[in-house]
Length: 342
Image (cartoon, rainbow, N blue to C red; front, side, top):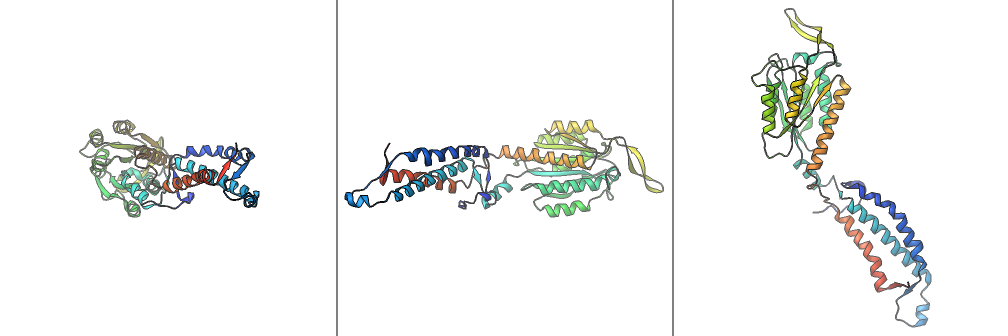
C-alpha cells in the first residue's frame, strides 16, 4: 500500500540530479505566460452571437492563466518523480532498511596495554567512546561485540538493540581474561558470530594495540576463515608513535612505565588485504574518530550500491499521478472547450 502523502519534506531523493532541470522552469514559464499568450484564443461555443459576446475576455484570460499554472506545476512534479522520491519514514522503507542492513562485529582488544595513557583517559575508554558514536550512526544494521585479550568471548551477539550493546560495552574490561593479545582468536570468535551465509554484507572491525602472542588460532588462519565466509575485515592499530605510559605487572602490583608502542602492522595489513578491507592507524583520539567515520561511509556507500535495485522509489505515485493530471488538464480544455488560433 502506497503512502500518498505529497509533502516533499517527508521524502528522500535517490536521483536528485534530475532537479537540475528545475533551471528550465523559468524558461518554460516565460514560454507559457509571455510567448504563448501572444496568440489569441477563442471559446468554443455553439450559442447565438449575442450570447457569445457576453462572455468576457477576462474570463478567458483567467482560464488561460490557470491552465498555464497547471502545466508549470505538472512539469515540476514530473521532475520530482524522475528524482525518485522515497519516503524514508514509511513502514515499507523501514522494513527495507532492516532487511537490507548488514551484520557488523566489533572485535576489541582489552589487554592490559589498552590501559596505556597516550590516549586520555586511556586507549580502551577512548576506543569504547568512539565505537559508541559509530553505533549511533548506523541504521538497520545488527552489531555485535567480541572482546579479546589472551582469550576471547562474545560480549554481545549481533543485535538491533543499540542501547543494550552500548551498555555491554561500558562493562567490558580484560580483568577476567588471560593476559596476552590473541588477535587470531579474537578474529576467529568474531567470524563465528557471522555464520549466516545468506547475508549480503558482513563486516568485522578489529581493533588492537599490539601483536599476536597468545591463542591457538593464528591471525592469518582467522583471516582465511573470514575470507571464505565473505567477511570484510577492517583492522585498526591503536597507539601513539614512540613510547607511551603503559601498565606492566610487577611483583609489587601494576605500575606505569614508558614502553615502546609495538603494533604488528604488517599482520593487520595482511588481514585487511585478504578480506578486501583496509588497515588504519590511530595515533590519537581524533584519528580514531576519523577512522570509524571513514569505515562508516565506506560501508554505507557499499550498501547503497548493493541495494540500489531494492530501493527503487516506493512513493513516487502521488507525484506522478498529480503531474499527469495537471499536464492533462490543459490538453483537455484546449481540445474540448478552448482553442488557440495559431
